[in-house]
Length: 341
Image (tube, rainbow, N blue to C red; front, side):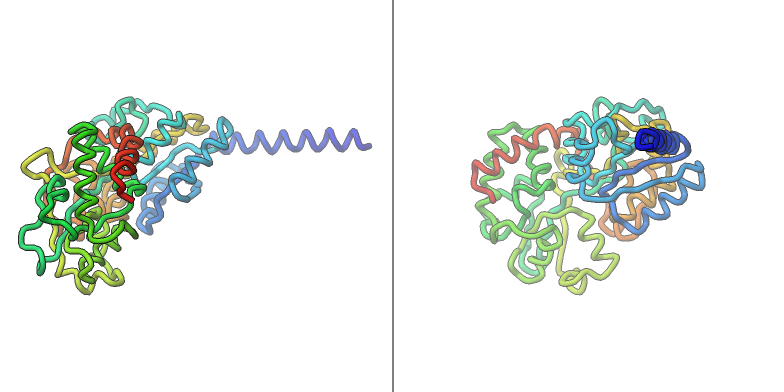
C-alpha cells in the first residue's frame, strides 16, 4: 500500500511538472521587473489584448531579481528582465543571465548607443543626469560636468553617495571618455565642492536647494519632471526657485541612462519574450513606457509627456551605455580612493 501511494504521488508530481511546463510554453510570458508604475498596467494589458499572451509578473528591486535569477539557474521561469538602470542590467549580463536577441525591429528602432554590443539588452526609455541650481543664489551655474569640480563652487554642491548606481554610472562615463587619472581628479574636485556629506535620494538633493543647504545639485531629469507633474513633498511648492542645465551641450552632450529590457538566458517562452521586447519598441508602448517614469522615449519621433516636454530639448551623449557597467568597479574604486563617501 505504501509503495502504491509513493508511485501515485510520483506520478502526480510528474503530471503537475508537465502541466507547469506546458503553461510556460503556451501563451504566457513570465516577467521579472523592477518597474512599479501605474501606467505600466495599460502597457501590459494592451500587449495581452494584441497578442493573447498572458503576462505573469514578479516585481522587486533589480539587484534582488538578479540574485533570484542566479539562485534559480536553469530552472528559472523568467522570460524577460526589466531594470531601470544600465549599470544594473549590465550586472545581469556580466553574470551570464541574459540571451542575445536577433531582431530587425529592435535594431531599426532602438538607437545603437542604447543597445548592448552583443544584443544582450535594449534600452526603451532614457533619463538625463542634470545640474540643478538655485535661481536666487547662483548667477553662473555649471555648464559642464567638469564645472562641478571647479573650486569656485566649493561648499555648494549636493549629490548622492558613491555607492549609488547613478553616481557610479556618471563617473564610469567619465572614465570611458577621459581615462581613470582624469576621472579621479574630477571625483576629488566634486568631493571638495560638496555642501554636505552625500545623503538621500535624488529628490533630497533637489529639496536641499529649496532649503538652502545646497546651491547646486546633481539629479536625474525624471525626479524634477515628476515634481512638475504632481505634488512632491518639500519640492513642488517651490519648484520655481530651481533652474536646470543640460551639461556639455557644446561638447559630447548630456550623460543619459536607460530603462532596459532583456531576454533571460533560460527563458521557457523565448519567442513570446522577443515579441514583448519588440512591442516595447512600438510607438504606443514607447509613450506609456517612458511616461510611467517621466522619461524620454528611446525611439526617435515618439511624443514626450507634458512634464518631460517642459524640460526642453538637448543633445545627448552617444556613448554606448554598456560602458557604464564595464567601468562600474573602477568608478567605485576611485570614489573610495578620494574619500567620497
